[in-house]
Image (cartoon, rainbow, N blue to C red; front, side, top):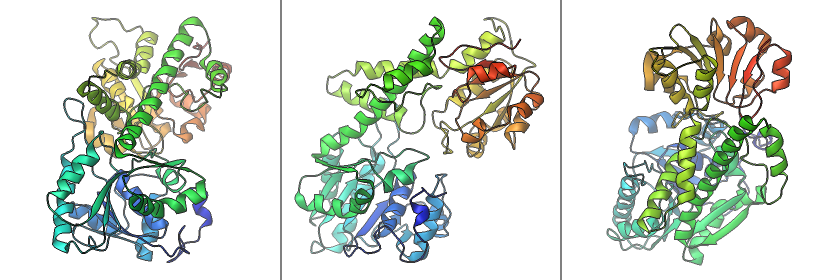
Length: 475
């Protein structure tokens, strides 16, 4: 499903955000994972000519047929649209198009190393390959802007520059251009950015980057920030760290609200009305997960240690989030009177679990609280039946038959002692609770996303556990 404004753009060979632009650029996007594929399709949507490059031949073949390997709303539509228009192509050959390219975006993975730092081997390997490809094309080709789009530590632009320069005399500049994409909203985030951050040293590099992003900024009214590369690199980590801190803060306030008899919904609304605070990222939940926040916080902590600047607030945020991921399991254990030392205290119990992805509108299960919850319940002897609208295959590939997989939310509830909600899919909130209640053994719900109001659940005879609000006990 396309973002709302895209639904108004007709399909066809020339219908793009940049259809009337004369300054079409040649863009290489190296890496067709989450960030790379979104960037490639969206730059094509802006009217540029895009060549996507990946070392995985099978993935390239799949993409060339218009099949996306990842789940992201709106992505399939843009992929098909611009493969058809010819604005987007895929190859395994990095040399293809390097001579004519205005910009080459590095969008490969930076997985977390054992010490918490970002593993830069893929980024530096691509930099080396770019330098070699540039050398083969000669130094008379136009200057190339090499863009670090992957999330990378401070100082990476200099390392990438040195790696490329070791292989070529051709003119180039390395630019830092961090992504701020939310899984589930990545297409609209790219096409309607609230800001674009570019770390560069020359006016020429800024001009090229503005030429790429201007159609998006014209539409969204977003802000343009030019700065030095180290500042741009740090901006990405600082943004994710601040958001993670807010999540952990409101989760701790929610836990305290329960203890003192307060309602976190009232608290978050009142503090969010303060213009210095604002309402965003003040919804309590079962801890943050995904590919960005956990990894980026660890990487930032590692940088702090390297430079003798301990990030004490962030270290506490990581610990708070680790504690919060057990919040639903603690509530289950308290409700069913699980005591330490009792073997398999939940043996014979069955639990329905709605939601496996770390958040709605994605199939990403990395650092998902649901996986920890499954481990906890199974280790206590319980049977778990799960459902998710996108992440079932990913979980099956990871944990196999440790759980049962239900085709529908209702099927998951058949004969279960309680229902647990870990992911905020809108269809879960819209579920017919009376039908669900008939499938369960008891009207018992542990809501890790606060999808329902305690008062409404009480009126319907549920035992209802949520976060930061009073617990309702069925009468």
